[in-house]
Amino acid sequence: MRILITGAQGQLGTELCHLLDEKNIEYVGTGSSDLDITDNKAVADCFNEYKPELVYHCAAFTAVDAAEEEPGKTANQKVNVDGTKNIAEASEKIGATMVYISTDYVFDGKNEDMYTEDSIPNPQNEYGRAKLAGEKAVSEIMSKYYIIRTSWVFGEYGKNFVYTMLRLAETHDHLTVVNDQMGRPTWTRTLAEFMNYVVENNVPYGLYQLSNEGSCTWYEFAKEILKDKNIKIDPVTSDEYPQKAYRPRHSVMDLAKVENTGFEVINWQEALSSFLNNVN
View: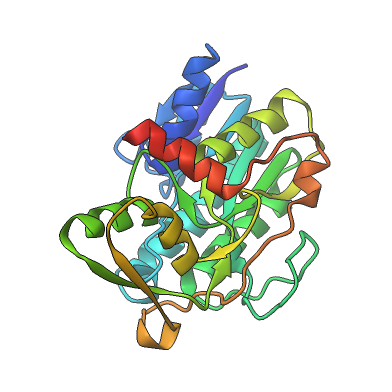
């Protein structure tokens, strides 16, 4: 099977490349310097030349706060909406299957229960709106696709909350972390494994939600990350830590549909421990 990975040099894309390497699965990985997904002709030419049968669309604009203002707002729209549409159209034209990564930020976070795949999206920031528009483009254009919503992503390759906490702990003896936003952390390894799993096991096409099991606040996440460090961590409210982009207060997504496929989802504490063992 001819496989194309967009965003192959990003946090998730790099993880996926390593997983496929371990499985001796061949692929072509592209980054922004190789393929400008916002350029419709460049995408069409790439697909006509390589003719991928499977496309892992990992490329994304993920600077959530920057997406609220120019030039980030334009970049967010071009990459997450226009770029995704270009990839979807090129994939559909040659009959490829596409795996698209979305986000819990498509929800407003006002639901006290878990969000299912059938819950009505209501994004409250520009990033969430763009990713939802990307979902719509994929589902309307394509015949064979997987949309996988995820949340609170951390991994070995790239910037993320875990690395930020570890770095701050080196220079601070006291930290404050938001304690009124609840969600599910996601290890890139778990996400990459599920992306590969749906293809290898012919899982029915459609929308899925994948994170690690269990939920926590950012404060609880930080406490677990730094539990072996000599540092004081205090909880604060979102109002005490203002950010440009609104963050959902409760974006815990239901994982039942994923688990019903037979894929084993480990809990976030186990995922975090494995990650830390890998990087230490």
